[in-house]
Each structure stands twice: as structure tokens, then as C-alpha cells.
Image (cartoon, rainbow, N blue to C red; front, side, top):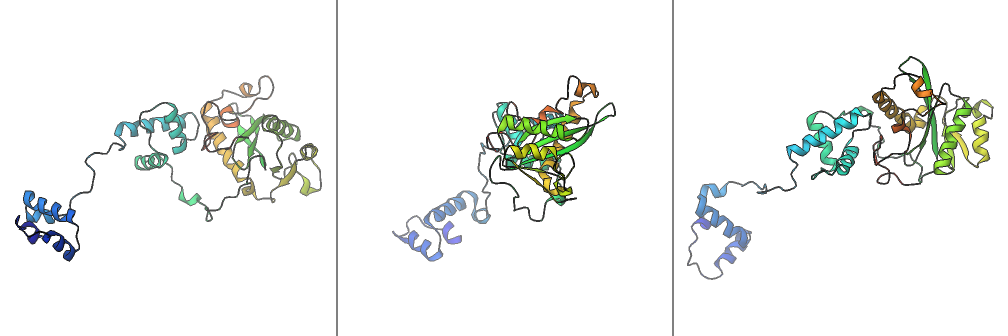
Length: 298
């Protein structure tokens, strides 16, 4: 540095090139250090300078962070999944001038403490996806109980595509029975065609084949050329996608504040929490993806 700072202007031609080759530096670095030593002094020239750019046009502003947090809070209050994917698509649909990427949104939520981190739920083989290769290759049908405001318990049938996790159809009944299972399956067929397989548990209303009985739902789907299959007894993880869908349903249903059982059953049996049980409407999804962007169309 001393030699560069004291470099004479009348040095012979080629001296800079020779000096740079001997000290393994570029001519650009030589002249940059010489300029810095002249303007700031030799000691200052030796100190490393910040590589931060003078301007950051893509930097996320505090206003944008506030907008992202507000959108997330609104989605969560509506009973919809409020992850980075949904927040990104909602902000894009609302026409915000600056919309952070999903990775940036996830980082903002972690920094603000609004994201629920549950690393213990991460499976040990998280890099493996247990999924059928195409839509309609397999549907999952499962039921769950929901307690209404009036105290009465209803049963919700949820039909989901294994590949895309699309909510095929939902149906509310007062009990788990084969008649209503056939109703929800026929709803799905009318909307998306006939699947290759139907995966259920071993309940008597769904598929009691392991008990040596041919159920009505099994007979009905077999006539359509659908292969009815079941998981192992006492192994609900086989229907893990549908079990996860139940939680989405409960979150959405609780946010709707349905007053009583009459509001659900009224004129016939209505679907429970339409936002979680039907196809996504207006680009909004109660799940962690948006139809047409992450989920293949049928």
C-alpha cells in the first residue's frame, strides 16, 4: 500500500503492469487503491469497505411488511390458510405495487413472530412424497365429526384428490352411513369424472371388505369401474392428506360462526363450511395452494 500511495506520476511506461503482475493484483485494483489513499489517506485505504449497494430498489419497505401482516391476519380471521403462498396470491390479486416473494413473506412472518413453527411435526423422510402420479388416479374419502353451536354433532364427508389435494366434494350428514357416502362420491364424479381408485378407511359405512362384507359404497363404485381400496386397520396415516384437510375444515368452520344446527340442515343437508369443502372460488383457497397455479386442472 505504501508503494501504491507514493507512486510517482513520472513512472516509466509499463511499470504499473509489471508491479500488478508481481503482486498479483489487477490494474483496476491498483488505481482504485491509489485514488483511495490520495483522498482518504493511507491508513483508511487499508480498511475494507462495505459492499452494500448505494441503492436497493427491490428492498422490502416497512409499509409492504405491514400490508403483508394485515393480509395474513385477514385470511386467518376468515378461516383460510394464511401461509406465504396464500398471502402472496392475495396481495397479487389486490394489486399491491410491491409484493414480496413467498420466501420473503415466510421470513417476515418468522421475524414478526406470527408464524407457527412446528419442527417436531416434520417427518423423518420429508424428501419423499407419497402421492399418486396424476389427478383422478386416486381419491380419498373420510369423515369427521363436528359439534354445532347448539350442541348437536354432525358428520362431514370430505372427498379429496390424492395427487393435487383438491377438495373434490363435501357433504354434511347426521351420521356416518353408506347412503351419504354415495351422495358425496356422486357429487365428485359429476364435477370431475370417475377416478381410478377410492381410498377409505375400514368403516362399515365406507369399506367393510376386511370384515368379509361388501358395502353399498363398494358396490356402487365398483359398478363405475373404480377400484375400492383401504388402509391398514388402526393406521389413519394412510389417509393423512384427508386428516390434514379436517383441520382446515375445522378452522374455516369455526370462523363462520354458524348459529345452530338448523342453519346447517334447514332444507335438506347442506355442505359444511363451503369455503373449505368446494373448489376454490375467485382464486382463494382455504388450503396451502391456489387452483391453476399449484394444482393441476382436471
